[in-house]
Image 1 (cartoon, rainbow, N blue to C red):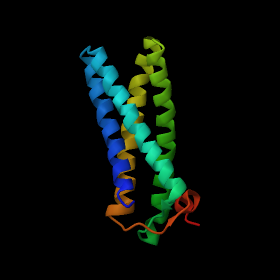
Image 2 (image 1 turned 90 degrees about the vertical axis):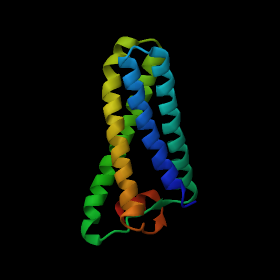
Image 3 (image 1 turned 30 degrees about the vertical axis):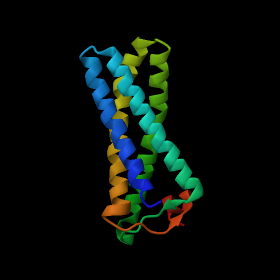
Image 4 (image 1 turned 90 degrees about the horizontal axis):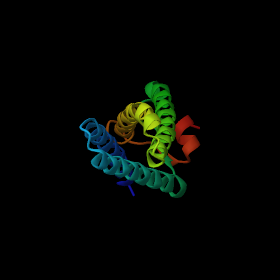
Length: 151
């Protein structure tokens, strides 16, 4: 199960790459390819969510294992990432819904905002992964609330 955080992170990176590809395709006027790229991005993000929630329920979350002196900065960054990811997810659902309902005027307005939020979500997600598993060794695996707040 130690591979799951890496797989989750790769899925979010893949979703961001697919969003970037989809953005480029729509600029070029390739609507069908754009749709396929964005649906693939959504499936990648949903796959991340399924793995993350399953891991959280059955295994727990890894707390920060780095130096105590930077733990507060990590915690603030993590909370920012979580809020950003929730915002990005809501924007993503709304943006996809607008597209599937054919409301392309609103979709065109909100799509770039959604994409930018998602890019920052992916970037901050990679940084969280690096801080938890690469730069520092993760702390104990525990419930999500304990991992986030350090109780």
